[in-house]
Image (cartoon, rainbow, N blue to C red):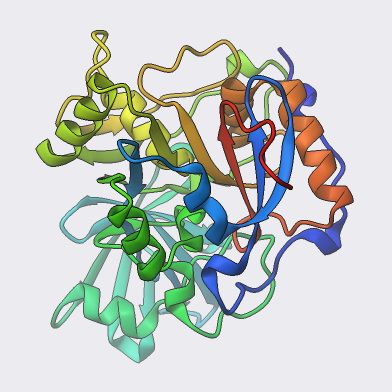
Length: 349
């Protein structure tokens, strides 16, 4: 299975640069994962595809304003630092540009001294370990100095930081948003709960591995970056009760999917707990818990397109993507959404 098997041509103008004013007004392409049939709706119509007894799994991670701009203490050269993951207390693994200016021992100053960083080491893929020093609370300083780490394909300035957060974002730690969840409003979630659909909250802190291109030719040679997840007893109970009663488990986003599939036992039960996952889902994978998926449209040849293809079949997914391109859907983080389920034939377009 080659990476090129997941390539498609995407017109540049279909990459969404700004979020819609109304989160739930985005378009929704509904794909039958068995037949490949599609229909075109709006995201708020998702309630028509959910049933009492289903369980919606959401990722409640919160994006931190992880992009910092500073200067090298001795030369005043400009440096950009992107926080990837906290290693311990004030030591973070980071991505630094330009890397050649950030050798071990280098001092970086942010916000005229409000925050300072010392480069400790160079680790995997040229990432830097930086120890930060400051007075006060790190998260408050980060909120003051940092910017949202938007993906490289978004070139517009984000006017409202909260539009790169889900309305249910709770646990800080992500370097990227779980973007399928951006379409939900509190009102829509309330409507879904009133229908008798359970909502299970899990956490997976999204790393920048999400955006890294697959650089190998054979899919099987690709290695996923590790990401931290948490599943509490309440979420495990809701998912397991749903499966036992014959309901469907529908994940909001590939991150929720990867979380529950990582935490599922061989007995098909979701286990409460936390840890690091490097799970890589591609065609041929047997899903332990997932029945349906709400997701955005992903980059060509990405691990996310491979995950979606594992659920609905590569041919069905690529055909649906071509349909979305013909219909001028908006792609990627601020774009439109897909719902992948069984048995959507006959649903009105």
